[in-house]
Image (cartoon, rainbow, N blue to C red):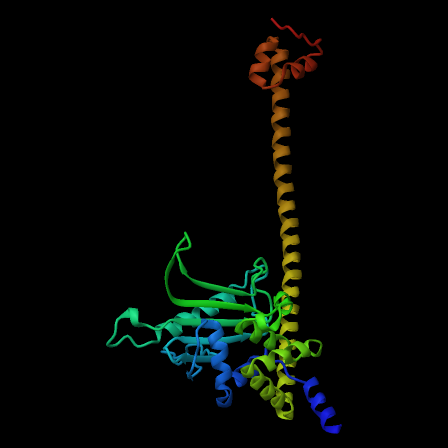
Length: 337
């Protein structure tokens, strides 16, 4: 009975594999090579019997270049290149942006991985097909229903240029319809996505365990994750990373809010200044208009004193007939000669 309770207790405290460090640890462990081959097969939709996990650092030509790291960079037995990334926390983006940082980062990784292939002694059409796959713990394409969004090179009519490069975003926040499917109807990528998103959540433990029983490669990953989750050092690292991430996101939100407050205040001040300037302009214009009116009245008075006819006074003063006749204390003649 004690053994059963201990096992149940272990399964209640599983760390989340959406943490990019644990994601990489699981899929690059030599004993889980079959699990990695399985998830890659789900991505490229072809069986993978063997693969090689490669250096996860991008080569740089300059020591001052920013050093980037892949999460899981591998090549399959048929030569195709696949880089798997986990994006658990939101990348810093412009307010109101469209996740351009995340999208451009994926494009950058894809292009770099594709272009680092050696072309020496072979034609360009022999370059291996390359995939950049990003698992996201937040929604990137809110207007698209599917949790898998795949992009290739196509023209404006949707015709493919070729299938040399592919970018795939897997949104782990859109799995509700997948959860409604019978497990036997789920494909490989659907099962792995459910595992990655829900294995650490007790309310979804039953369906995750059913998937693990149906899919041996996922069961191996789950058992390894349970074991790693009991390691106090790993748990301490995980807590530290979560605290750092929370602090980082809090600081980002505070900075963003402070920026918005400052922007609003600067906008209000600019508005007030524009209002003052507009008022000054209107005042100057009103002053000029009053000056013109006074000059016109003076001209009209002088011409009237000299006995000039009404029509001539109107012409030279710029006043209306009503204004001139009012000035001369004459009745308004609606049919002037």
